[in-house]
Image 1 (cartoon, rainbow, N blue to C red):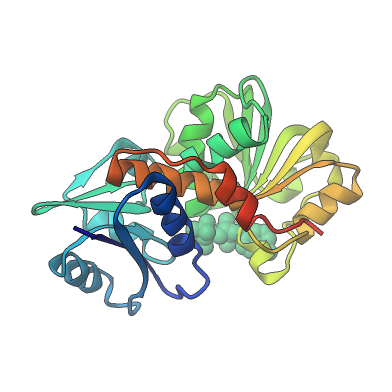
Image 2: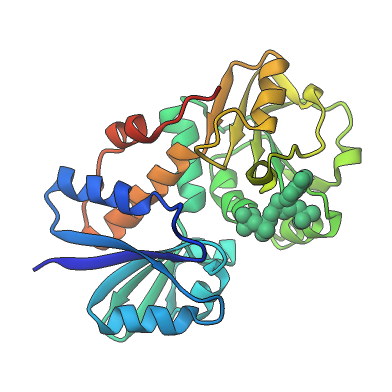
Length: 273
Ligand code: ATR
């Protein structure tokens, strides 16, 4: 019997998830149909319940519904608690289970696809919204030497870091206070590049042989990546691998088989020019 899954968001037209999961299903021989669902801004939980009532087995959740997805879960897995948001739902009888694979997807992409170990490295995380919140715990589990969270609204950076509890490796500040420190991995977790904007960092944040990672995907050389490139950084990446790795984790959770991601990454990668 064909099982139904969907990605839900608003807007949703831009989502690559149906394409990704359809490729995974084909490669693993899983009998699924995966569609896009645009829920009205005030109608998220109704749309989820309707999808489940029609036989849906699980959903990916994207902006702006990740907090509401967590709130409607009856069982929450640790990564979703830690992130304060859910990006994947699984329906099991009456239960709505929630998880969040965004951070794990980022870590897998850095470590496995870009051969960029996080252990012992200095990491600069730009932004303090949902994307950064989801990334922090999985990054810390890899054992970085230091993580600095920088945000335009300083208060949000402080809150995200303080919620971790006692964590001496992690600090926060506003952009003017970054100073001359340089980092091995600089991750743009802001939404600035969606509007063609640059978070106010200086090129001096990129250490020798640093990696510049843009969580947004498919936009080519964003202002952040351009800054890095102009500074002589050659290790540049956007978030396409993160997207596909989190999708593979969700697929595994739903179907019990982890698809190979390489071919899908190759297919969806857009040149960083
Ligand atoms: P998401 O869930 O994708 O992280 P979000 O919660 O709206 O989205 O967060 C967007 C992040 O991008 C925030 O950290 C935001 O900074 P503020 O908290 O100060 O709003 C950051 N951001 C957006 N545009 C930016 C810009 N031009 N420069 C710097 N930071 C920016």
